[in-house]
View (spheres, rainbow, N blue to C red):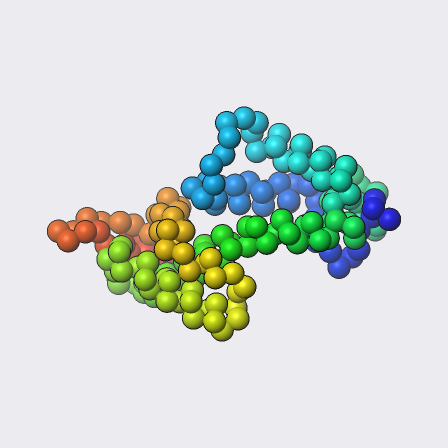
Length: 174
């Protein structure tokens, strides 16, 4: 039945999914070029309607609440395909933030040396099987994720004579 979804497939209420979409939209705003147009809420509503029409999303069989979303049995392959398009980017940001653990309190590193540190960790995690996409080792995307950490005030950048150093901001130094 395309209007219901299996309990093993992802589901959630519209507001929770919308909050996650907003977060991912902000996270990826430097990764993708967004066309000027509808706000994220309008785009989300339109996309959900489209995915319901194509039977990718439906209502969980356990509820009659129209604000509940679930991936349908027939839409699971398309949903997994769509997830695979963004997972490499999520991996990059995850690995970058985890790599910041190397920046212990009162420790700093040159910005250009941080990228190879994150790349080495990403490569080790990839070959250990912790994630599936080698794209997470991409230096340009790692730089973008580091700049996101600066924008989110996880890291601060300070100029020095030979370049720039990064350090965890005061809030995250232990």
